[in-house]
Length: 259
Length: 276
Image (cartoon, rainbow over all chains, first blue to last red; front, top):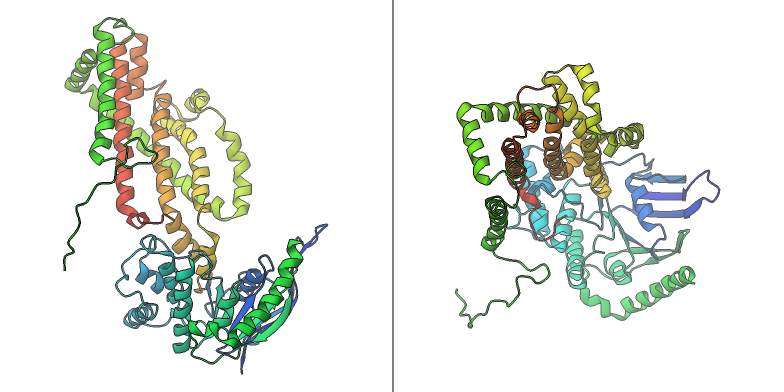
């Protein structure tokens, strides 16, 4: 498998040069292959979101290298798309305009752009809401727009930072199924950050477990569940065994910070 | 397909329950009613001679003064002069406050560069600058613009900075992932996102500019609403003073509502279930 993203001995230290620097990420190593769906899970504050920002080029490692397609990441680029937990839609643009906004640097002509935007609106099931403004949409619908907007310009990797974290349990389920479906049809490389074990298992090919701060990779778990996946698989013995394993790994870490 | 509905009840809710909605008619009637009560009270106080006319002229006397000034053209002349001064003075202030406030809200360097100085000047009373401004700018409209500027600019620039800072950082970050440059993000994301807040700042500061108008026309003016008030003070023409005050209040109210209606038309996208 061709490698898209690799972290080599990545550190993140805040307050460099100060008396008591804070080590947020400690010697982190990982790799994401082409068209692979990889999750990072870990207790809150472990540095997983910081790592994602660095992968996007929106933050810089204090030491080590982050390679994208074999080259060091230097600043943000349209090759790496991002979906945040909070709503980052432009409230003055409607659904269609929000998605089209991401195509500004695209070489496509206006008619092709329009067709593409329509295609992605259909993909996330928002037909009929093209003219609606973000303030008129529910939280789940807004994240659908955010996902369509992050996919429409075909970035080589999609970085997702707890994209469903702010949604209620029911909507969250629906969004996970939607993301599975989207990913099955438009295979792309995804690096997904979450603290939800079931979510990580359901979606991913591989899961990295992070330690509590200073965060580093504690374990790597391959998820051999067959695809296409469905929510029903969550009750399979295979899934439950994996869940138990991950739960144990996470529990050790949570125990470490709360004590 | 129509659904057959059971007999419906309206939700029982007192009009003085916390945050309870009331009908628009009630809302507007209350506001107009209060103004009416105010005028009736004024009329009563003067009609019953509780206060002498030299201290508080009757509504009728002010009305007479209004008709007189309307007839000889004084009112129109004053309104025109004052509206011109306030418009130009406020526009000059706004034209400079917008770019500087936007720079300060986006770049910590410019915030550090300007904020201490602005905080310092902001506390200086604009009125105290009147003698100086006459020395600097003479007695023409230029001097009025300077006073309006001193009174408005320093507040305006800090408010614009805060408006810009309310734009969520994630919105800026996500824009970079679409391949936009720093300046494109500033122009296409930060500015439109900050616009509703900035519009409100403009509305509020224009209101404040009206306060400084009288200050600006305090001395060395021969026309204008503030000038008319100041001159009437010398001759104890309280009806003229009250008329001037009422006209300024009315003009302020009208501009405020114009800004509010424009806001609703410009920022329709703000309406919705979840205000961002």
